[in-house]
Amino acid sequence: MARSLFRSGCVVRVVHTLLTWVITLILFLHDTDLRKCEERGELLLPLLFFFLVVLSLLLYFAVSLMDPGFILTDSVKGGQGSEEEMESMIPQTSTPRLRRCGYCFLQQPMRAKHCQTCGHCVRRFDHHCPWLENCIGERNHRWFTVFLLVQLLALLWALHITLSGVLPGASWEQWLRVNCVLLATLVLVGVSSAVTAVLLGCHLYLASINCTTWEFMARHRVSYLKNCGDEENPFDRGVACNLWDFFCMCRTVVWEGLYRRNAMTSQPGEDH
Figure 1: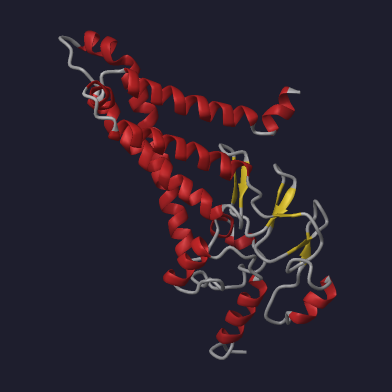
Figure 2: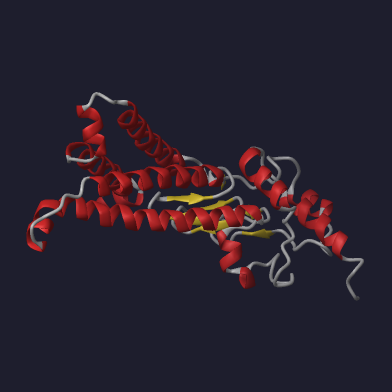
């Protein structure tokens, strides 16, 4: 039972929530800028910080519980057309043949991958996030990036608040004893800030070139990319279009069509 509970993500989500609220309480209860603002009756900054923490938690649970784009049926393009019809629409000379998953035996659209942890194929699979206990895919990737941005803002603000509460001491021993809780908080928040900043930078970069973590890390194993050049990305439409599509487009994309168009435009310059 404990194993199934951990698999469901309950333990991870409870730990994340408890850590968030414990750190928030520490920052409010110690002699930090937040505490000083409360004592002076200046509630705007404490309320804004509290709102940012709540927003980060809401985004965490939204991304964690959201369907990342699981493929549950054998249809492509939202149920329009059979496998044979879809393959006839996409010339196999320019597009790799549609394949079936070796685990769930469903037909995989281009850029989909099976996640063995979740037990499903995921559209535009990016990665499986163990801290969220969910896959990051076509439907929740943009919200994952927004969550990272909000989380980073909350962590950097928490870092500043923690530093404001560190008190001087007559000796190292006294200084460590007085500030031990805030120092532990500082280490935890600092490490989390660095990790979140790196993740946010990586995912913004991948979004700007219309690439996924899986495609970037395992390019030589991806059937539709391993025959492309090292710098060639058949889904890249330019930074502006890529970011617009990533953050603003909510519909399911048939990546085979974009792949085919880019393949056909690149053929005239190729030697046969």
